[in-house]
Image (tube, rainbow, N blue to C red):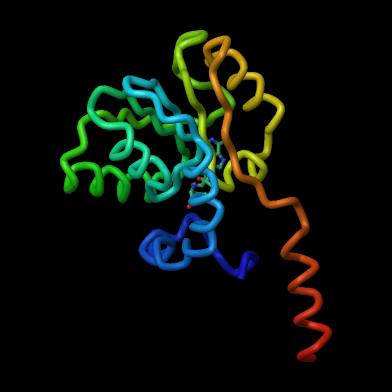
Length: 162
Ligand SMILES: C[S@@+](CC[C@H](N)C(=O)[O-])C[C@H]1O[C@@H](n2cnc3c(N)ncnc32)[C@H](O)[C@@H]1O
């Protein structure tokens, strides 16, 4: 599936929400382990079609400031529609790569990323940016799928069914 999916195809975003159930258990684990502080400033890196960005906005409430950063144009449009429909006013969307984040040094209490950073091309630069914008006691809370995990599973399928 990975090879067949053309992320530039405008239709892909319409089904992404349907297939994102695979990411839900990881996201749930992430949400269960984040510190909940009123008035926190949060950044969600690689929110795709709005997960967990929108959930964070609702859980932390209006006193909090939630940023989301992504580069996937169609998914950003979809997320903005969700934000508008839900009437959420504590979210700022950054339409840029997490390799250069438009946030001042040491502003963020919590950074999240659900199955995001480990799939990025320039991870080292993203972690450099994370360190720069986190407050000294800020927290980074991510989920990650080890590279190649699913390759092994798919290889097994091929061996069995061919
Ligand atoms: C596997 S998806 C995860 C989406 C969402 N967090 C979820 O759980 O469904 C990874 C996301 O990271 C985004 N992404 C990839 N490279 C990026 C970068 N350099 N900066 C920001 N976002 C990036 C992709 O556009 C995509 O939306």
